[in-house]
Image (cartoon, rainbow, N blue to C red; front, side, top):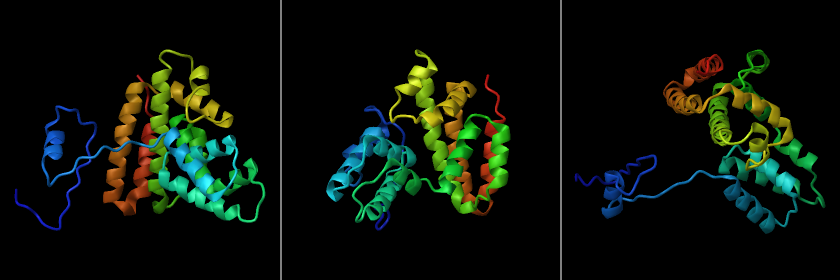
Length: 237
């Protein structure tokens, strides 16, 4: 009503039904815009990879494509960064192997971050403490670790929902994007360590932790570690 100029207000909402007053207002007012956004999944990320490879005339196997999508942790930006690295690596090379891509995309820092998250979700306290003690994570890496937490927690939730009707082995084997054989055992531990209710609560806590970190960046590593220890010690009931 005040007709503010040079100011854009963005409201991030969850699912808005057709009966939503907020959705109705934004759809009818000429000065407002309402747009739906959807998280990337295996299929959408696969399209990005295939289009990029076709445009750059680079041949990669399906196994390598799956590895790339798994490594990007659901982030389109991370995926595009990896594709740019592959484009540079592929210059004057006739063939790119799985081992080439594995080494190129498997930075030790990213591996340790992923391993940290996996062992927290599996509640492997001993392994978790070893990872924390052997790595000097910085404040700058905290946001990346939280993104990995969010991606793996959402995947865990999707897997857990399917486990109600099927056994763990069949659910993991049929999951998309495919879960690599080396990750299957720790994912089984995670599924046995969490209930659906606890995973929903975990997703909320991840969001709260991210907000807290953004407000107190100097203390971000301490906040993250407090979050990790709290989740590892959570007892399911």
